[in-house]
Length: 211
Image 1 (cartoon, one colour):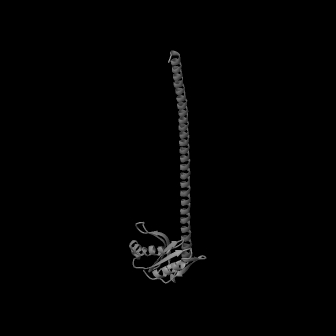
Image 2 (cartoon, one colour):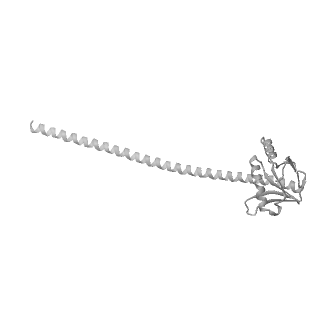
């Protein structure tokens, strides 16, 4: 191989290496560009996710606030219906303080025991008897069990009436498909079951016992 051929060979080699480096540089630039686009996409996606999470969090908190508002409103409705029922029976018994043929000469409402733990919705008194009336907008059988517990509590907190005959009554304004069961339970327990009929109290169960 003479010098001329050697020089051509070296030039070809150098040219090939230059083209390779140029190709590698283009590939690297393309890779860098793709990497940059990927980072920008990830950053944009991450921002969108955070914005979505923030918006969703606000919606959840707003929904929670609305649920709380509805719960409070329903709670107020429950209180109002209870007050309504109590006012009905209180007014009726105040105007005509007769229960099961017994006349009472004093009717009081919302009486608490000395410790402030037990409330008596309506109490009727005469010289030898006391009637404890529990008022519910819609009474349940479980209310009878709770009412029975108030006998001893009343005697302990009202010693001046400890020897009086005590009668119990459960008053309710709503009659539903469980009414017959409620009447049967009240009769079995020996307590009055009072219902509201027009503007007077109606005894749905009057087979009572003295406590």
